[in-house]
Image (cartoon, rainbow, N blue to C red; front, side):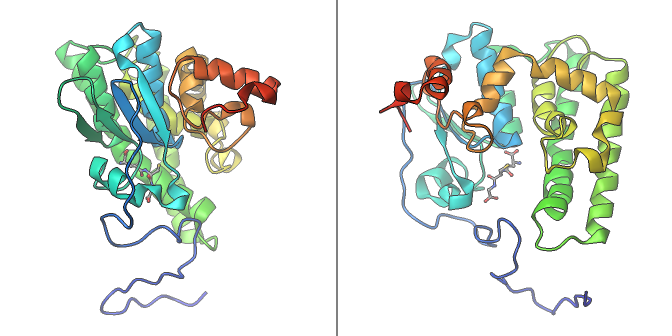
Length: 294
Ligand SMILES: N[C@@H](CCC(=O)N[C@@H](CS)C(=O)NCC(=O)O)C(=O)O
């Protein structure tokens, strides 16, 4: 491989390759006019079942599971590989053009919330759950939540990109980011050695955020890198991952806005609690779903 010598001024090479090269660009803002659909529930979510999206659908399903009917939501599908995040309606909800994006329509004046960590915190504060009230525990919860927000770009944008999406396998970036991701797994493993959940005995938004990324990695579902990173050796992470994976709200939340994997794991849009049941029936008997929502 020839060494890259950066020119004095960087220019956009559209043909740079890589899995998402066709949508990535160095300019913000919308590329086309497109309104977003709006449903009947207090929360309108525009998302996709990537780890950042799953965090939020798990939280909404956990709130509903805990009896907070005010958390009812419509989940609309944003296909990021087709550029939906650059539509004018989406950019108005998230100027950063990334899923997830939420409209809180629960009061007289709807308002937007973007960035998955901000969405989790907003919902936790609004409903007064999944975040400790006590000062020290609350600080610990926020610390792990923001640890995830700061750490996952090394896992996704760093390791995942170079291991799974870059046009060629390059040893230097894969080595650098594999080392960092293994260090992060060790950080979690040590914390979970003495704690059932990240903040102690209570399951919080910190677990939801971290699980969506590092739990999926521990289950070998991210970048097909389970063996490469020897994820099974992080035994405390494995114990915590399996325990959270059994929660019904987590199982439902993982299905929402999912467009990959087994058909029975995909619920492209969610508008009602019964959609999960309809989904199960339609997989068993496709005729049940004829004419159902897309
Ligand atoms: N820090 C953001 C990251 C969101 C993010 O990176 N979303 C990705 C999918 S996981 C996305 O929408 N990518 C589309 C794009 O980059 O154009 C958050 O946590 O909400």
